[in-house]
Every structure is written in structure tokens, then in C-alpha cells.
Image (cartoon, rainbow, N blue to C red; front, side, top):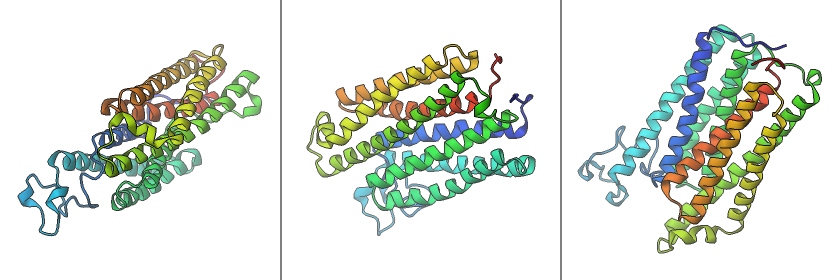
Length: 314
């Protein structure tokens, strides 16, 4: 059976820190969107054709329209890019350590390298998001790739802590049911994330094209897409509590993980209701996307632990 490996190695420490930092970056990205700073820097990789944003309108290059400059929004987006750069270096370092210490362990080395390659793509694609002025399709792909990166890091991290997964056929029926149901909830949650990103992108387009429209009417204009997002969110929330029920007789670690995941689903769903009925307050937008990414992380952790925790572990 799988056994956890302690004390923590340098790969475990770095991979865990990098994974948590990547979750933080997703939350920061949500803050950038909520603040309306997605185009705070209208070009990429520079910001107003400078390596650091201008602090005054007088510092703008002659070919830049001064109407585009907003000091606060420019620096919010710039800090977001800096955090992304730091996390890119963290993932690069994690991949180096994975190569040095685990290059013969495919479950650790391959997902780490895949995360590194996707980070390079994500950096380039972020420039395309700016170039196409936050086109909802580009923003959705950008978020989806970020989630794939954090999934890969989480997978590599947990494989760094456990010797090997147990074959599914050797597990009791309740553990197989838990693993299967959790994978289904992950799939539905990813659909909900995509729908949510599309809803948010369409809201941004409405704000740009119909600035006179009251905020509480924005979701009505989005229409069917918003209703699908809400219904899927309710389905995910209910399904997360089913996961808790599936783990009710399992080991304490799995019970705690599923309960925490369901609580995250509750906070995220409540934030979504607040967004719908309180005219999209920015603070709830950040809570919604942060809890959404952590919810997916909790579900992925549950699915991975279901085949790695011993049946009698604490």
C-alpha cells in the first residue's frame, strides 16, 4: 500500500510552496479582473512601452494615447505580471529539482515539466489576451490553462509525498465509489469554471459597449449563459456534499479533505449568489474565483488521496 514519505525533501517543500503560490496567483488574477485592471497595461510585455509603468502622464511615450493611462490600474496589472514572473521562476526551479532528484519517477518529473511548458505558453498567451482586449474566449482559455498548471503541480506534489497509488481494483467498493464520484464532480466543476469565465467576459464587453447600463442589469443581458452557470454551480455544490457522504466512513484525512472541499463549495456558491443579487461587488468576485480554484484543488486532492491513503491511516 502507499505510504507517505517524511521528513519533507527539498522537492516536497518547493513543490508545495509553488502549488500554493499558483493558487494565490489565480486569486490575484481574479482581483485584477474585479478591479477592471485587465487592460491597465495596454501592451505586453511592456507597460505603456516601458519596463516599469509610468508614475505620471508626462512619462507616457508620444505614441501612447494619454486617455489609456490610469496610474492605479496600470500598477495593479504590473504587479500581477511581476507575481506571475516570480511564480514562473518557482515552477522552473521546481522542474530543475524534479530533474535532479526524480527524473526517473515519471509521476513526478513529467507533470512538473508539463507545468513548466504550459507556464511558458501562458506567459505568451497572456500577451494575446491583452492584444485582443480581453476577448471572453481568450480570457476563458487563459483561466483554464492556469487551472491545468495548478492541477499538474498538485499531482506532482502529492506524488512526491506518496510512494505509489494503490490499484483501483484492490480498493473496497466505497473507496472506488468515492474516487469515481470525485472525478465526475471535477469534470462538472471545470464546465462551470468555463461558463463562469465566459459570463465574466461578456459582462466586461457589456460594460465597455453599454456603459450606461446599471450593474444589476448586466447579468440579465448575459442571459442563458448566466443561467447555465448558476444551475451548474448549484449542481456542483450538491455534488460536493455527496462526496462528503461517500467519505463518511473513510479515514479521518479523507473525511476532513472532503468536508473542507464542501465548505469551499458553499462559500463559492454563496459568493455567486451575492454577485447575482448585489450588483456584482468586486470583493465577492475575488472570493468567488479564489474559492473556485481552491474547490477544484480540494476535489483533485480527494481523488488523488483516494488511491494513495492506506485504509487504516489517520
